[in-house]
Image 1 (cartoon, rainbow, N blue to C red):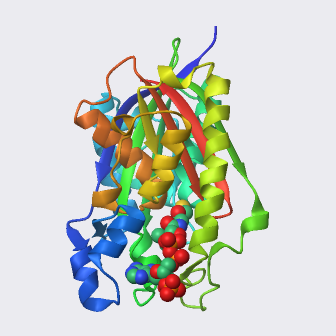
Image 2 (cartoon, rainbow, N blue to C red):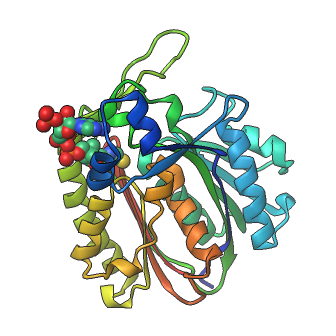
Length: 318
Ligand code: COA
């Protein structure tokens, strides 16, 4: 009998501190008008000193488990997608496993920048389909504010912090209809972090050739969403929601136009969250489900693009 991964529950966490464009105007040569028209971002949440990507992941995960009505003891796989782990090891997933008292099971981090959640979801989907596990906890948790140079107006205005979580369960009916991931390392010099110093390990600041990244993102995502629909055997008019990675509203709208999808069918969080990297898709998914826009039986297309370059997608029947 075929087995599929179904979305059983979602959770999210955003740090309390909010940094608005107007706040940034006071410390940088920038303006709310420039940031809003170029990116769609109005504010972002900033992690506090006593929080970590694991503490944020814990809150999001507990909410996802509660909404899924699944016990932590039943989880058979933990994947945390992050490019801002607190330590090289143990992995964030193992630290989370301890906090949630999840019994022995595979637990590891995935580092694929802004496409991290797509990677984690794809791996969990494959393991559920292969009937290796029944329940998976898939999380994106990021502290991007600790990775940006707050003097660099071309990058710091873009990013925010937060965590999103989903619980997947094995079921006889789909679920995730199709998922895919890929990468092309030839573009590694267009978006990267500097080497950093001994204290900070890989914690150098983000460097980006923004307009180049923009063009390749739009082109790659156009192909990606077509391929995703093809793999799922759906037409774009059968899609109910686009749940995209939230990097730039103009990139998202270009993808929606390519799909001939009206703007009302996009779950957008970018204005309030900024780019939370691997956390952006699960946070958007959680928001759409919480406010009841996403309804059972509907078709969702998730897509992402990030440093590497990396990219990924999933088509889901909720
Ligand atoms: N405020 C005001 N001016 C700014 C600014 C800011 N925060 N940041 C850059 N500028 C200036 C630049 O210095 C440049 O000035 P110049 O023309 O005098 O040289 C001008 O604005 C245009 O810069 P440019 O980088 O060409 O702007 P853009 O239209 O490409 O927008 C991004 C910049 C970053 C918003 C856009 O390129 C982008 O979103 N790229 C993709 C980023 C992305 O998705 N990254 C993550 C992938 S997951």
